[in-house]
Image (cartoon, rainbow, N blue to C red; front, side, top):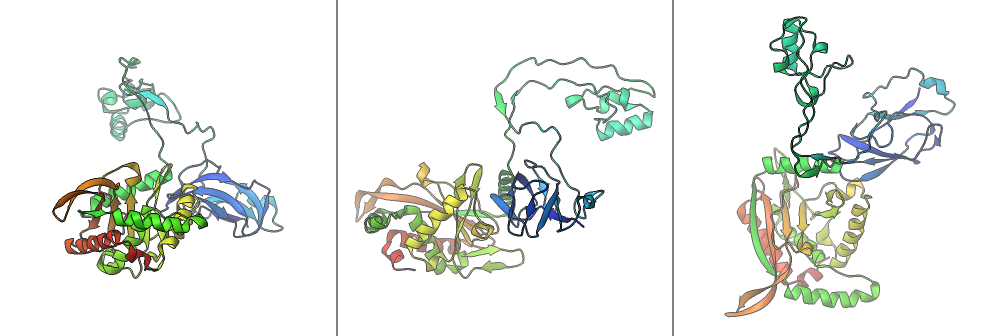
Length: 415
């Protein structure tokens, strides 16, 4: 009996995925570990390998097909010595296979007129009745044949007004075709990728169900910038360069170690406190963002943190992150400072309880010993889930974070 190759669940939030590309064709022989296809999940495009050996008997889902349900059969594998006739009349044991439309239009946005109404199209097709449920019920009561009714609703849909005044055997007069009467600004509708759909769903859920509150603090970066310069001079012969964001990650990890109540998440019937600082860092990619994780960051040197972050950021932009590299995390950082953003409030990434928004470091006037002077200052905003983190806990965390940012030598002694 043929073996079903199923659409895999490549992340906990994945319910469907896009079959981007097949790397095999019908008739190809494969062994366990061979590359079969590329699947676009809610986070990245990932490669799927064979787990059995045999011959690709039939591809059920064409490449380019979107929204294929998890566990739906996407291909059939013939076992060693099994004839192709075993495919005859084969019925999937799982979900009904999905396939791409026979003549699929290119997945490109179309330019349309915003204020131009769609023309009314008669719906005398015998293949499909395009009518509202209410119109169908009224027609059934009156004995009206909807195949003889012309709809006046959007795209020719038969609506209530089209059948209200009719009796059995009577058809409504065909409405005239409406032509666009005015032009408005042009626009385009860009189809949603799987990643954008998940981002929209999760962030809407976050703002609707998590009681956010915000705390803001300013940190002076002059000592940090001087320490970074000196550190990079010492690393120049190794081709390494520490960024301000590397200091931020390490400072967050140490502050979480010092404030364990902030290193937690809401799990419904309990507050889960984490033993290590697994810091998720938002990385912008072409179609959204992903949050690769520096795990156990409090135990690592700032050089190690920097090295790992560079590798993860490149993998994120190449769509090559493994699930374990972006799933989980106990705390998130979103840094828009490199884009010149002075301050912003980030949305919590559930089930985490905190996310920290980092603005741009800039020269500002500050008072030191009663005198106005210039310092490099960055504004930090902590978004917290009030079910998990109270105001004092959030304040304690920011106090610890500020201490490490303004005394960076403390970070060099850790890990």
